[in-house]
Image (cartoon, rainbow, N blue to C red; front, side, top):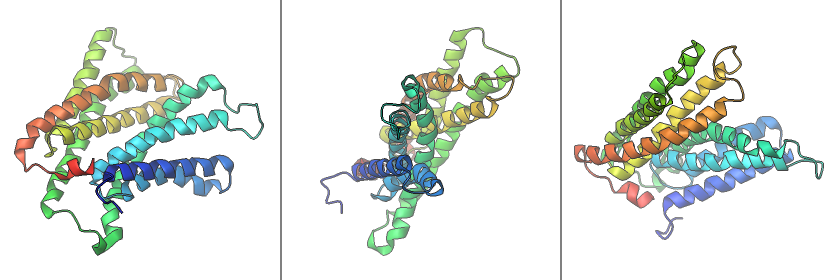
Length: 279
């Protein structure tokens, strides 16, 4: 199917985007029952991105995250503009940015996981028709995922304590510069931890740092959601703004740290050419 003219990652991205559009359309029009459309919305786009082309699970996760970004925005647009009564908005138009942010926070990590799962399942579904990757590539892939998990923890634990646990206990940072420095250091350290275990160099570390940041922020957002209905902590309407501020500070430095860690970790193992061909 791929003749070398189109990168495999582009095929996966296109498949994920088209599947997401179809899933959102089916959900909005009500042609299928909700118990069918809900799993489609949650899984179909990310799985399609990972299943459509022969990419590694980390690349599948990145493709899924990209499709999840699109899915969150598309869902918000449909929620505001789609209505059975012409000229009457179901959701007020000014809420579109908030709804888009909520969708992105939810869909990006879920689709990233689904994309990785799709990439893992593809060679098993194709069986012998698709040659498997070289055996030595599996340990570096496992190391990369361990690095992503470690980086996500490095990001989520200190920031979760600072912006979720501490406010609930009545402890607040009076110095905004200290809090901003914590955002910066956590993102940089988490990205570096993820990237240094990526044997594909700075490029693989870039992706590892990004995924570590996405999953770390998703864990913090989940904590905010869980306590948003309580009497202490974040009010229900404030946590999306908090996540947006965290993303602004954390994600760029997680990516930077991942690329830096990947360049350091390159010498620890053989360089892999497969990520270059996939992208």
